[in-house]
Image (cartoon, rainbow, N blue to C red; front, side):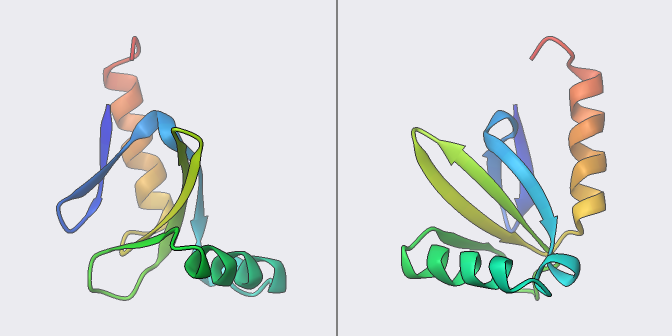
Length: 90
């Protein structure tokens, strides 16, 4: 199953490792360092032109990727939960 993350982009739900709220996590120097390193390595993808509210950490085919999205972490988690509830066998 795929999950929309904005601007006509979608990721496979099963590849999502974690969803992070940018306001809460960017206070940590470790998170800022992680995001800088991911950007340096070309692993950051902006899913839209608007100011991001959250980011998703994904892993697929052995590659980590960070998606910046305009949706809040709570909204993303609710959408995923609804999708999983409607298709429990996926």
